[in-house]
Image (cartoon, rainbow, N blue to C red; front, side, top):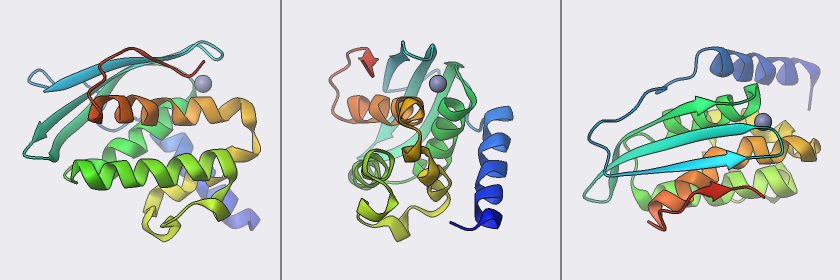
Length: 151
Ligand code: ZN
């Protein structure tokens, strides 16, 4: 990865961590779940409003490090308005990108802005931070409804 691209990715992550998008509670959410990453101290509550298989609204609250906030913020901007099915596909791609590296993710070209998270896999301690919101999402869409822990 070029230094220019790396710098740009860092800028996007810093921006989303300082001003997280969709950082609020959804009062009429159809589902919500709490997710914790004890290793870092990240804690989020993710809300979704599902209407006819579509994510009509998605938002989160909580406290955590820059990576966990930025990753969850980016997730909400990319998935708002999409179908549950598409969201699970994106989860699969992001999960592969974070745990195995960007070359192992299917549909990596569809990741759009989420590609800024591609550098995280080189830092194993941060992978749990970056994937916290995504595991919460998967739990919500599969309606297991249990508190998610990355441990
Ligand atoms: Zn963290």
